[in-house]
Length: 146
Image (cartoon, rainbow, N blue to C red; front, side, top):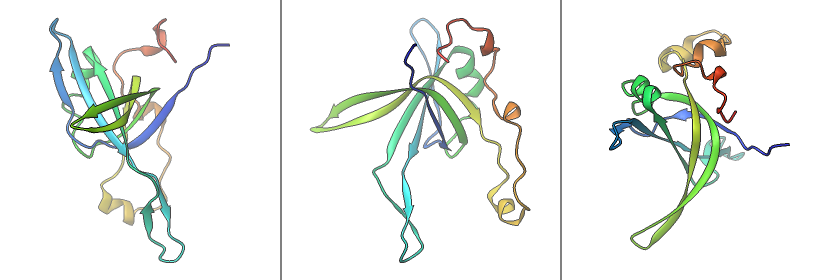
């Protein structure tokens, strides 16, 4: 049996995607999404941060990078799935760990504007086939890690 770890995160991008090109001309789109675990305070009923923020970074390449470049803006709701990897860093006497999601599959999360969400009846279940918008037919790739 082959060991494999997968992670799935849903949230909002922390900044606009950063589209660049490698020296050989390949398109690369760098994206970042934070996650802060929250828990409800039983005395006040308010939600409070229960852990430090985890910053997940992921990169799209080539056609996927070009396809998503104009869509991936700050506060865009997305779901990302991939293989988790931890990268340690050190800068100016500080150190930390970043979560990187390798071989990401990305979907834009379709949601009504926030004003309409409060007025709507119970949310209808969306088809996940419509939500996943990764270009290309990844199901036929032999080297896909999933």
